[in-house]
Length: 112
Image (spheres, rainbow, N blue to C red):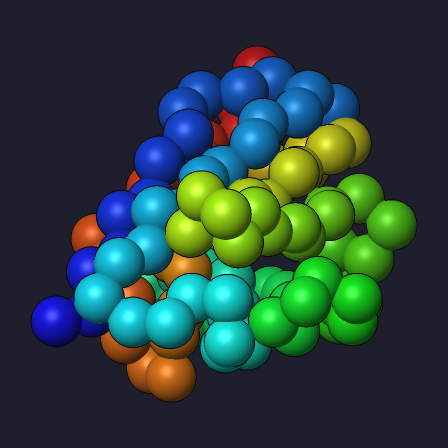
C-alpha cells in the first residue's frame, strides 16, 4: 500500500525559508518520478515541481523557479522541497505525489 507522509510546514515570514519532507513507503521509491503539488484556500490543485528517479532532472512551475529546490534521498525513501524567499502567495497545503496518490499534506503559511 502506498503511504506518503508530508511534514515540515508551518508559519514563516515573507522572505523566509522552510524545508518540506515527504516520507514514502509501499512502492519502489528509487525507481519512480515524484512531484510536489499545492492547494491554496479556494483554489484548485497546482503542480509545483518534478524530480526524476535519480534526481538528475528537475522541473518547476514558473512562479517558484529560482526559489524552490526539489531533491530526494533514495536511501531514506524521502522527498524534499526546499522553499526559499517565500511569498504570501506560496501559502498553501503542500502534497507530495506519486502517480496521483498523495498524503495528507502539510500547511505552509507565509505571513508577517
